[in-house]
Image 1 (cartoon, rainbow, N blue to C red):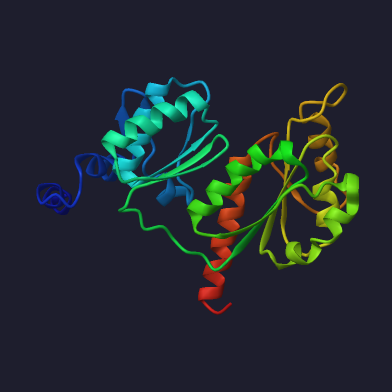
Image 2: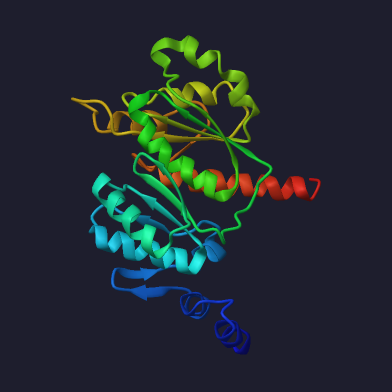
Length: 255
């Protein structure tokens, strides 16, 4: 306790950071930000922008930056992003913003992220799957893993898949996003000895549309893989990041 008070007094720790240390979370007008989630779970709290006002998104982002030196956001609309960019120009003028579709990673100059000796392969079947893959991408970048991304290799033209197999095999863990019938993760999982995390995407129409057919196909895969919920790019990225961290630890310990 005394160390926290001394750190606040000498300016090396902000009041928000001290509050996060004591409570594990920081309350604000938009809710309670779980600043201790990374220490507890290994993955930081992501700010789901969908359903929130621009003001709430800004408030939560600023709290995340104050307490953890970075903020990870998902499902950010163009309007919310414009408000966020404008607000941060005043409150955190030296931040680095990495935006990939609706996924946003914001880092202050004080952020010292990890660097993992592990590669996560990120694969999409088609262009429509890319926004979901982008969520996974920013989570993996935040975790410090190397991301090897291969887009648009759906099985409708199988040669596109087969000519990338060597890259797939070099990854330590694979995330494969696909909509429609969702066949790509099953095909890739049958060609590699790498753990595969399948992400069904809500593309398609008619019977089995909105990701239902993709989810069902992945759950019924005859090759071994893990499946997350429809459009759950963040969850897939978090799972892959945890696997990558375990691999990095094993390599560091010579295992």
